[in-house]
Image 1 (cartoon, each protein chain N blue to C red):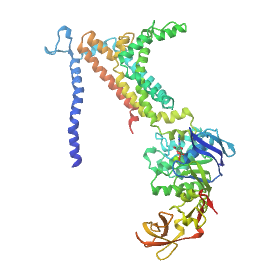
Image 2 (image 1 turned 180 degrees about the vertical axis):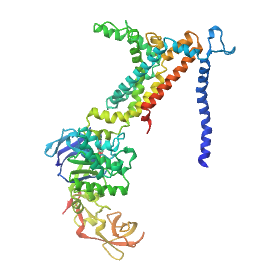
Image 3 (image 1 turned 60 degrees about the vertical axis):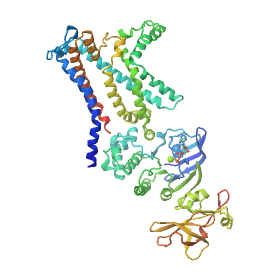
Image 4 (image 1 turned 135 degrees about the vertical axis):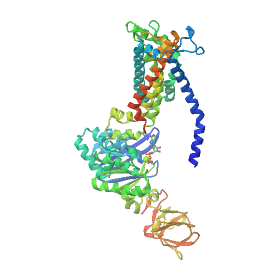
Length: 334
Length: 292
Ligand SMILES: Nc1ncnc2c1ncn2[C@@H]1O[C@H](COP(=O)(O)OP(=O)(O)O)[C@@H](O)[C@H]1O
Ligand SMILES: [Mg+2]
């Protein structure tokens, strides 16, 4: 239960077409991540699926049934909002119970589900507090708890981790992934952070200006980005994109090479450049290198012990097996 | 050091305001208390310069035993309560309505606020002469249009009419405060409730109303203070007749019509007691909403 199909769905706000007609299938049990830069229409797409926005055209099918004009409550989906959207005047217990209360579920069943959710989310000690007395991570968990108890056919998350600090974010990322493994329910997760997308997704949908640029598993997107946008967006640090003469040598308009696919040497190599900023992460060092024609600056990854300093001359050799080639339209050349 | 220093500096700088406020309240209060224990009939030759006769609680007893006292307390409470109920119920409805995106929103909002800028005397006169007049009033014409006998509003339905007039004046205030409160509601909460399966009325009951509780409390407290003292509306319309004599109007009559300052002062002290009973009650019932 939880297969969602978008068929030529589009959305305009007044004159502005935010999402041109698009097709997308999300399979049952899949963890799908919508990723793209801010303002590209990820939230809008999620809200269309949730029913909080009306489609301008097209159809949304949930488990084979046309849900295009079905009210949000009847779609059987649960949403976790970026602001958590907890009810501030209700205790944690009442917040979690709210959807069940609206569904007129029996009190024993409510209590059973609340206890189970609280245990799973480490909220047992906080059930009688108000949301205002909780930390960001705990609020996040209450919002997830409120979604779980409904036993929805799919979960929708809109940038749920963006209000948390970095350490907490990594922790919650794992918790949500584990939750997905345990519940085995369809999840759609919106984020602008490609690291979240890569680490959590079964399937990533890359969006730009409301258009789907590519759909695939994280490794598919990493290995064979369909165009320059996806190539530049997926992967951290970003892929180096080189234009001009160097690209022409490979019969392409643009070539791309990831920082981890470049060998650095202080003695010999294909390209020569000078070291700008070096970012030492301990395990790795990212070096920004200036002076390579067609790419300013070029980022390379070396192991953490690689000893160069600002102004040194280094030589770079790309690993040609991992070279990406793109035509003038930015599309991938095989 | 620094904090102690700045604290005493702060006290020093607040002192003028505190002294002024205290003086403002304490001087009239002590004078009222003082006169309430004296026989003071200026027209009979009593004056502060000649010394006033101490009469103990005689004024209090007399004010309390007057046949108008309990009816006036009752009228006061009915007017305050009626106006509070009407302004809050309709204030919430209007606020929700004004919060909807609509054409000409700015103009409509200003028009809704307009009654608040009309002086009480003027608005009461307008209501009395243009709406409620039994021969020429708009309401009389309306009644006649349906073949009904026009209502003598200010004599036959004096209290409801008065409540209507005062509510009309105070509705903008309530609406304005409630509107700003509604606008501060996070729309994601409503959307979350919608997805949780709460239909419109339940969203109102479980989300919007609790969110408004603080604003409603403020409206109740502020309006009560002002409504206890309404005067012009009564003076202009019924002159205290037909059961519309409130406590403050009764005091006015005692002091001015019977020229008995002592008796009026005793009434004033009763009014203070009534206001404080109401204040304590209100703080008990709704005051907890003010805690963050
Ligand atoms: N209610 C709305 N009315 C008008 N424009 C909107 C509305 N909601 C979103 N938009 C516009 O749609 C675009 C996509 O917004 P959104 O889906 O929130 O982006 P994202 O979540 O990817 O950052 C933005 O340009 C935004 O300005
Ligand atoms: Mg968004």
